[in-house]
Length: 137
Image 1 (tube, rainbow, N blue to C red):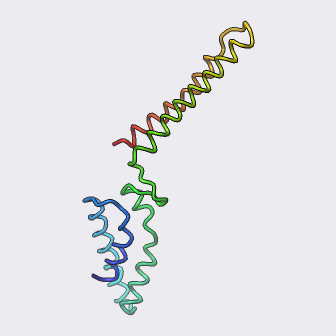
Image 2: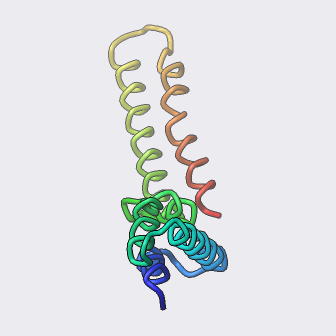
Image 3: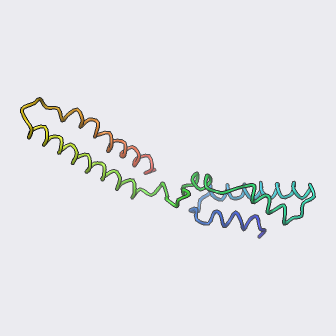
């Protein structure tokens, strides 16, 4: 295995196996090998050309994000975090709305006003529901 292949394999080791991962890995190895060949034609040694090609390629954060793992290691397909956020937003919204109901009825005979801010608070669990559904796939 060449140094380029080892470099790419190390960079891809924390990404779950898939056909897309293997396809991207092969494309990157091929592109880096072509760059090494071009640099060697310009007069660089093989080692210098490999080092320059790997340094010029940069990091793999965008590729990892595309394949399902972010740079921080969080897997966006992990539904547990999104599900917990959804239930936290539902519970938090219920508490806020209950507090507004209490304040509305405890402090007087005013018209029922708690309904209006309740609509605003309900956007929070609605947004979390759509986020959970999006990442559930």
